[in-house]
Length: 116
Image 1: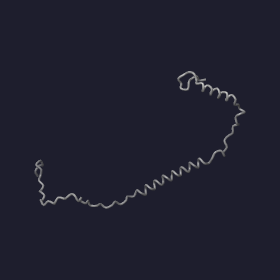
Image 2: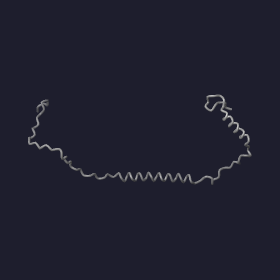
Image 3: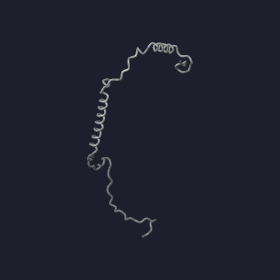
Image 4: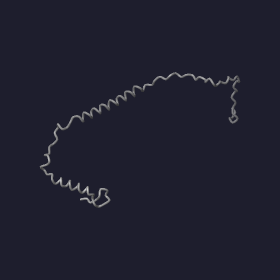
């Protein structure tokens, strides 16, 4: 018999635990081979056909969900035409500067570049 306490800190068992062990030991001594039922192999009728049917149903539902997801993804994958671009409209509060009439200056070579 184990003489340790339930928490493992002491050496004496609790009184309730001792009483339970004694009651279970007395009951075990009262049971004999005549009290047990004879062993029988399980019959084929005891096994139901529902668990495999459930597995098949769940598998088919999962397959249908994946097929629907693929169908919706492929169907919506086609590019949609974009709307035509609109020209920006100036805001009413800002004025545009008038165009300049000064002709552009001709390009000059930079002083660091070698002459040609």
